[in-house]
Each structure stands twice: as structure tokens, then as C-alpha cells.
Length: 167
Ligand SMILES: Nc1ncnc2c1ncn2[C@@H]1O[C@H](COP(=O)(O)OP(=O)(O)OP(=O)(O)O)[C@@H](O)[C@H]1O
Ligand SMILES: Nc1nc2c(c(=O)[nH]1)N=C(CO)CN2
Image (tube, rainbow, N blue to C red; front, side, top):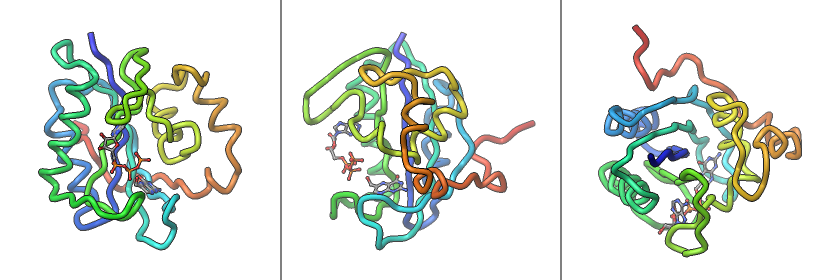
């Protein structure tokens, strides 16, 4: 079994369509998908708001490297151009965790080192897995509680946007 938590982000072009492209491509492996959130940019603040979501996927045939490559292929398919670090992008797929795997390889850091500081990841993840633990850091509920209130306020649910069609 290889269960991964993926963080999805987009702030260029058809933002919802870019997030949808991931959910559609991974539909066979999909365990859960969060609500879409409109979020204030962190890192480089002078850029458009992001749409963010988190999904949990499970596929016995994919290890952590396969999840990274899958995410990168989807970024490419969305026409992503690598320019500025933390700058605008059509699609960002970050591998947040894969099972309990720890990695300090710069090509694949696990868990993703930005996670404890990012309300745009913790809030959607908490929504779909309230008891989740970030390996090496503890319960994500506590990580979120430790962030400044302003960070949480910058992450607003967009219930009008749907990533998965409900019947
Ligand atoms: N857990 C991970 N998930 C995705 N990419 C990772 C991870 N760990 C390391 N990387 C590496 O990060 C590199 C740069 O990724 P990217 O351009 O998406 O960074 P960024 O989104 O600007 O910043 P951040 O990684 O802090 O969100 C990629 O080449 C990738 O190999
Ligand atoms: N709110 C928010 N801000 C960001 C995001 C993101 O996904 N959401 N991704 C970035 C690039 O890594 C930079 N800043």
C-alpha cells in the first residue's frame, strides 16, 4: 500500500480546471478530496490568490518517487513553467506525505518541509483527515492551532467550486 497526501495549488489561468486535472487523472486512486479554498499567497505576496486543495490517494503500485513523478507530469500537462521560487504557477503538486516515509533527498523531501507552516495545506488536510499526524511533527490539528490567526483567516472555503461531482 502507498497512501499519499498531495497538496494542489493554482493561481494562473483556469485555476479550478488545473486542480480538476489532477483529480480526474488520479480518480482510480482517490480516497478523499477536500473542499477548494481561496488562499492569500504566502512567500511571494504580490501575486494572485491561489486555489488550494488537498487529496489523499492510494495505489499499491506507486511508491513515493512515483507520486512525485506523477505530480510533476501533471504540472507539465498544465503548462507549468518553472520561474520564480514561490511565484505564480498554473499547477503545483506537492507530495506532503507518503505513508510514514522520511526522506532528506532534496529532490523529494518527506514530509514536505513547508507543511507545518502552511495553513493552505493544513486546513484542507484537516478537513478530510482530522486525526492526521505529520511524521516527525505531530497532529496536524496542533500544528494549525500554533499558526497565527491571520494565516487561518487567509484560507477561505469556496463551496461554490466542486472538484468531485457528487451524485
Ligand atoms: N515533497 C516534495 N513534493 C514535491 N516536490 C518536492 C518535494 N521535495 C522536494 N521537491 C522538489 O522541489 C523542487 C521544486 O519544487 P517547486 O518548484 O514546486 O517548489 P515551490 O513550490 O516553489 O516551493 P515549495 O516546495 O516550498 O512549495 C522540485 O524539483 C522537486 O523535486
Ligand atoms: N496561498 C498559497 N500561497 C502560495 C502557494 C500556494 O499553493 N498557496 N504556492 C506557492 C508556490 O510554492 C507560493 N505561495
